[in-house]
Length: 388
Image (cartoon, rainbow, N blue to C red; front, side, top):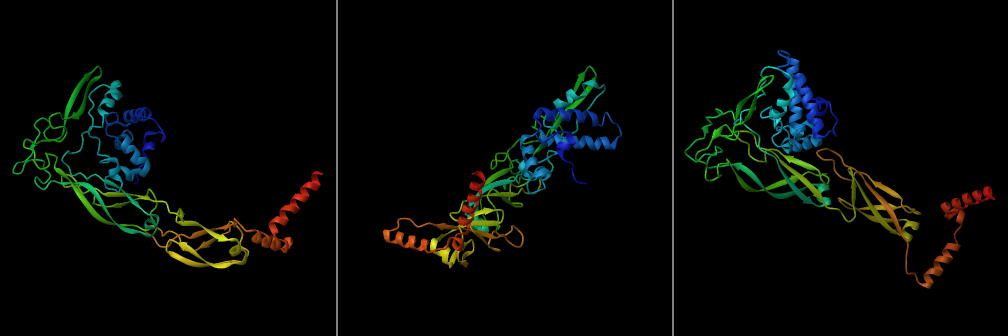
């Protein structure tokens, strides 16, 4: 079954404040907590769902990724999951849930225990890397090959990601026995409540490195400069992204690599503009070309094409060139190109040229040659007759 919307789970709107999110979470967690509903599987599932929703919406980075990409934005197995860090990772330390639970269950007696985090040494997917790439309008429209440069965190070849000096191994933390957290019991007026806190001895890692690797300084990864040849898909638009799976940071403890997210910045073109998959441009014509008609050269993103301008073409006339627009991304077909006629009126005429034009204009029959002008003055005449 598909996941419900996190805002719906908590019963709030998308524009809710942090306080409203926290208040809604407290109410729902109190309602569905397993200790309040012993043996109720439906309540247990809803409690898990509520915690998952709060885990995302209480974190500004994860909330932003969820608002932009939905559940895919916080799913570490998706192309966009790493936008929200590691995504939802269970109930763990609750990212401060322990303090909330101390307030939620003040009205109940007995002991309550928050859920444990996942194994700190479990396989974890590597983080995504976001790279910005500047390309031209034509490169975006038709696709291109580019070489990009970025830094990636790769597993340290010296310690193989263990973080320990070669020949040594990490030791299980004696304080938390490798769980990464310790149990804290707090006695209240209503009984004892148990919560789990991050182990201060190992900082939640579940293991202690007594002899850190000198190559990676005990981190387990090293930053490496990468140059990668990529194919930019035809039809991509400004601020859009495409994903190269497995090209992000290396995973931890045998987890999969993250993804490489490439966001493009498309430069403006001197002639063309774009709306969706259609291309628009203006074509300047001389007065004579518009009057007599002529075969002209029209620029397109594929190169120049010939087009026959009809005799008597009017200003702002737009004609369409089918399938001369932007190719559909990862699909068949493409948009069209729309060409708007811009008739340029001549300037700086000589006296002789002006006389020729006046003579020409006088030779014209207004009823046959100036339909718009005749219609305008006919309507104006009707208006004046009604007024006067």
